[in-house]
Length: 230
Image 1 (cartoon, one colour):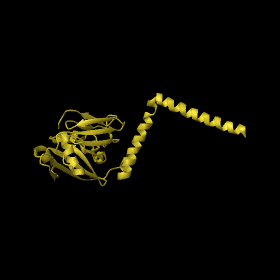
Image 2 (cartoon, one colour):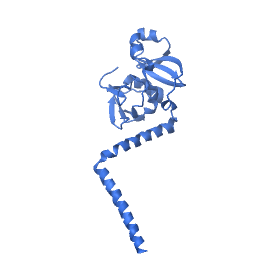
Image 3 (cartoon, helix red, strand yellow):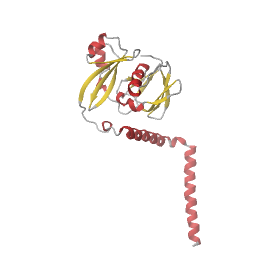
Image 4 (tube, helix red, strand yellow):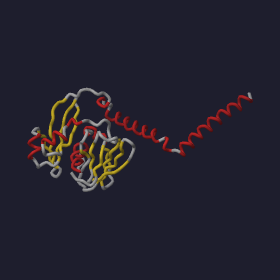
């Protein structure tokens, strides 16, 4: 009986020493845990998206997309006036009343948006074509709008329809339209901050003079353009 008692204690001692050694080693080498931390954070945001909106099967199953209607959203960011048009060529060539134009396309009963920023129709076809490509993966785990009073709004869940290659997003004109459409929030202040966490758990900020270009040809899937107003 005494032998078993001491044998049991030695087992506990061995397990405890092993756990202590592993803990000390990871403490001295924290980079070992980083890939697992990143995976945990990613799974958390995937789960949060699922609980909020359900599973998006389009991201899991590659199949032919069924196209439907195309509209052109024309928006005046000063007067906060929106008009839906179909005559894309005419608006592109001649209409300067609206300083934000967005192609709205319905595919498989879902709506996607592509920024229109070229006035020449040939450039529109070459560089702004809607199906230049959807992003292979979303670039941001979290995007938070923060105004000068400290009010914060998480906006990343509503950015999914805009994740298209070469799309220009998150500039001030875009946000004036976007925040009003999805959050009934009127941007009146000149300054604000976007707090962004990318897919690699890197955190950074952009301001009202910056914007984002989404890009499939980079590992991080985006490019930050600083101090340029479009």
